[in-house]
Every structure is written in structure tokens, then in C-alpha cells.
Image 1: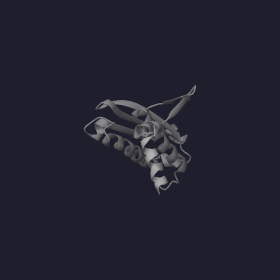
Image 2 (image 1 turned 60 degrees about the horizontal axis):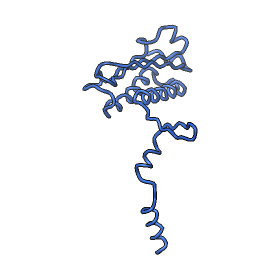
Image 3 (image 1 turned 90 degrees about the vertical axis):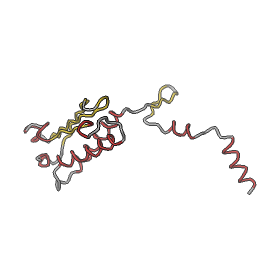
Image 4 (image 1 turned 90 degrees about the horizontal axis):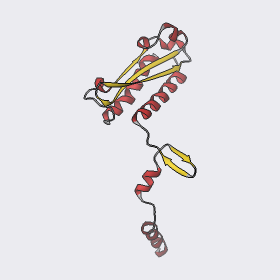
Length: 149
């Protein structure tokens, strides 16, 4: 029993690892350059772009045809952007000042629909409310019938 107590004592008192060290090590992504580990802080725009790309890829490849794809895409992207707005990363007192989503016939031509190209334009307010930075996404959909809203 004394050995166990002494072991815990040494771990807590003489350990070089603190909570701050652990937090710093968990930052992602990490880039390795000549034996140096450089942690790169991901920008809000990059994080949003990544999340939307992942959702669009998932929807385009796994859609079964039982729901309209355009409505689902708007809802999924809306959920992502709403969470960023609620956390204060998108500026604006209302949702319409913080972001917008355009897809369907607003962004796609009849030729795009026939070719199965899903085009989405997203505007996000990162600097000032209602001053949008545009993000454009393109995804090829397996079931082309889903592109009709």
C-alpha cells in the first residue's frame, strides 16, 4: 500500500506533464518539419469548408433517393453554419446577417443537373455582419434524379 501511495506521489509531484502541455499536444493538424512539430491552428473558414465538404460528400455518395437531396443539403449546411453562428464565430445579430446558402436552381443550370453536378454557394460573415466571404462547393451526385427540388 505504501508503495502505491509513493508511486502516485512521484507521478504527481515530479511529473513534467501539465494540463497545458496535454492541451498543446492535442491541437490538430500537426505538420512535421525537420524534427520540429509545428501545430497549426485551423481558421474558422477552413473548418467550415472542411465540415461542409465532408457533409456534401456523404450526402452525394450515400443518398438513397427517398428524400430530396437539395432540401437535405440546405438543412445539413444550415446546421453546420448555425452552430458556428451560435458559438460566435460568425458575426451578425440574425442568421441572415451571419450566413446564407444557395443551391438548386439558384446555382445550377439544366446542364449541371443533367450531368449530376451539385453546386452550392455559401456566404459567411467572418469580419463584419452581412459582409460575406463566398465559399463554393461542387459535388458529383450518383443519382441525378435527386437534384430536382
